[in-house]
Length: 333
Image 1: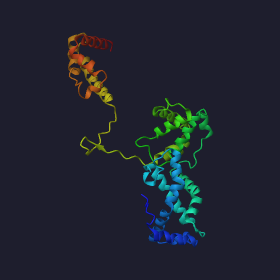
Image 2: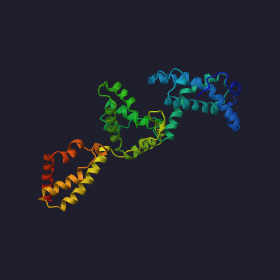
Image 3: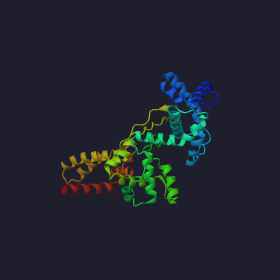
Image 4: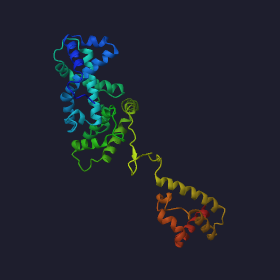
């Protein structure tokens, strides 16, 4: 976090101001020892961050509707704070590299170069991640989207997002934010939920993928350079941190379906060895295999588990129907 004490590092700041007034700041920074460079960088940071926040960050946060973030540096949200530090770093680097003339008002000199310096740094950071520095909509993409006003805006949003280092929590795309943007563009309040936006994203990506090389260069590669989100901590009822649950690769009902398929295969092996006309034998096999399935446990997720499986034992009419169906299958196979 920034040092909000204006007296902090006053000697180093005074030295930086003196070097700037003599036109020797950039030359001194270029030949400084690591320790001297650290001191100059800290002084430049102390000098630059208030200018960056009040002249740039606050206005940007207000434009985004982040009213709390616009109050003060210590009220910035994580993603907004990252952007702020990126901008301050760019200004500090520019000051130490290009302050070659006599500068008697360092804050004024920084302010005059602020927007150009931060925009250039932003584009260079995007380029380093493989994203387009200035995302624009190719004609073929606009044609593929039918020049739809919202979808073309969303396409630009996607190209901008892939070049941003932050993430949308545990999601791939900032769907909530884009849902609000969808309302602003389309005026469709009721139909602009995250599911609708996800469908729109899928549609835009489908068109983008028609140009495989372009998609790999400007979407997949920068998207893969994002910092993956950390897993949230799991807390039990006693507020103690516990191990997260095991990752389920399939849904519970899919597991239940798999078990039922295995049981059906076992039953079929036994049934093929029985007399297809012996209803009692078929009934015994079906009841033996399926009648002891625990429909209150892991098999509770099986489709109609509470109705169909228990009926094998309890409902004689249902059991006779199943036996007749099995006999027909065996007779035909």
